[in-house]
Length: 148
Ligand SMILES: [Zn+2]
Ligand SMILES: [Zn+2]
Image (cartoon, rainbow, N blue to C red; front, side, top):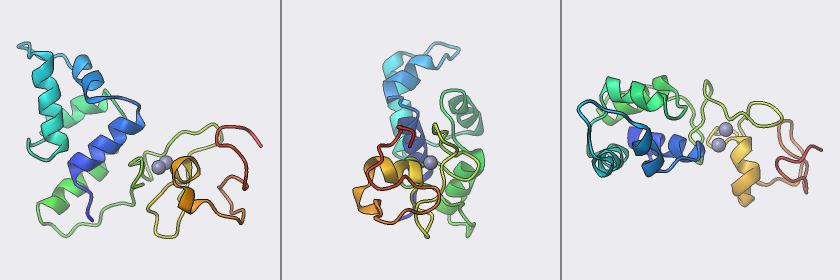
């Protein structure tokens, strides 16, 4: 399944711990737009219904972190262009230039296919817990966030 620009923005928003309402509350527009309309607009963008202009993308980057190159390549892919999309974590949307900052270090890829970062693999993907200790992953039994 190909990630859409809206999917990507949703993952990055959620990874930043923000709800649609949180983001809507922070957006200031002139003329003033009611809060619920801004929330509806954000939902429409994430669902791929409303187009995301460059100006809006820049605005959203003040709210939460994402990689504009990833967003642009996903948008190009959705438009039918054969562009190479950088590897993106399917759980948090992080990517090479936009890694999760963990207590240890920036996250690394947890799998060969570069589909999940080790920050997510250790937190919420039990199937990726490995019984062997690989570089960049927690040893078995270690709790994420607790220094070994
Ligand atoms: Zn991740
Ligand atoms: Zn990550």
